[in-house]
Image (cartoon, rainbow, N blue to C red; front, side, top):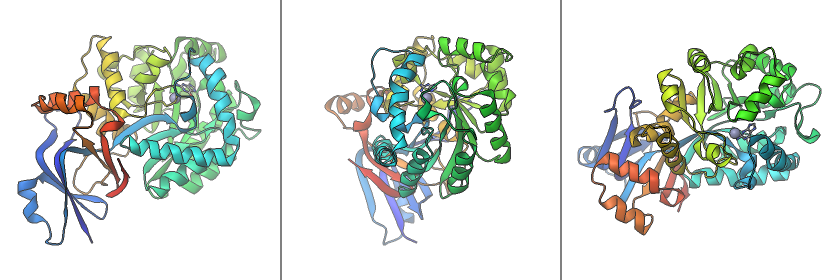
Amino acid sequence: MRQYAYRAQIFHLLDDPQHDAEAFQYFKDGLLIVEDGHVKAVGSFRRLAKTLRASTKINHYKNHLIMPGFIDTHIHFPQVDIIGSYGRQLLDWLQDYTFPAELAFKDSKVCVETARFFVKELLRNGTTSALVFGTVHEGSADALFAEAQKKNMRLIAGKVLMDRGAPKGLLDGKDLGRAATKRLIKKWHGRGRLGYAITPRFAPTSTPEQLAMAGVLKAENPSVHVHTHMCENKDEIKYVGELFPDSTDYLDVYEKHGLVGDKTVLAHGVHMSASMCKRVSANGAAISLCPTSNMFIGSGLFNLSQLRRHKVRHALGTDIGGGTSFSMLMTMNAAYSVCQLRDLSLSSMDAFYMATLGGAKVLGMDKYVGNFELGKEADFVVMDLKATPLIARRLKIAKRLKALLFAIMILGDDRMIAETFVMGRSVYKK
Ligand code: GUN
Ligand code: ZN
């Protein structure tokens, strides 16, 4: 079995900094050793170099930082063409921009071409895993899974379920999307590194019958995820109250239909009551925080302190195309800004945790990815610490690790990603 060795600065987190502030490793001159796509060793170059086989060539990246690949816990692949669409808040944004764009995915050629672009763009931004929305069309999920499989990515996705509140071409038929979802689960769930998520868009676009059907599918397939939106925007929340008068709140709509458990990821959670936080936490569900989207669509400022207080699992998502960047570095920057406006200064350790190991935990894949623990799958990024003149200048004076990481997450974006590896294989190089 061939051995690969990568020499650079190396950083990864071993636990949530909120539990243990010292649970990280940083090697100023580090070595990552990979065998058969898995982490064989990580440590200082001095200590590990002598353990290498004579035949192993060292890939030396001077002025670079190697860290685990980024994990995006909420993104829509069919929305790449509507990023940066002007002047609407959520419900109008969906009607005016999103639904028209998603109608095009009836055409399998559009699915395949967009999936190809999307996967490339993830890797170009150093994102190696993601939880992804398709459209209502079965072919959208098929195309995305096929593309992710080519790159051997650990990725979870699903065809959207919706049967009201959108143009006819975006609605599931008489069987409420059951047959297509079942076919996709059978075809893709657990195939290689892929996983399926049952994906009701959000309460306003599903009838109670469809949500009930989704709950039954989840009960029949306990290992799949559930992926939806919740409490993003105030008008949306009011509308859900009108559509579901028998539910006590938005979360209750999903709870009533068996959709809230430890494999459920709820995007946004910007406006949540204490009761909702308690119940999300008790059910072991997770919130994907999407700060660039929340600011761009004008949805509001998420409340990280409240989520922490209630021990709600959470991580970061880009929410392309409501979100404005594929870059998890820019997403961390936006998360910092949102927290500042809420009187919380998000630390660089917390932000990098949410974008790597924390994301892996939210997606239930931390056994496999998220850091460089021995035996984990070698998904990693090589970041160019001299990507731009300003970054080079600013990072040179950031002497301590936390200051270095903070400057990276505030100034960094796709320009910093020099190379991306998936299971030890280079899949993007600048
Ligand atoms: N809520 C329901 N659908 C969507 C979507 O596509 N994007 C966002 N940001 N929120 C949603
Ligand atoms: Zn979304």
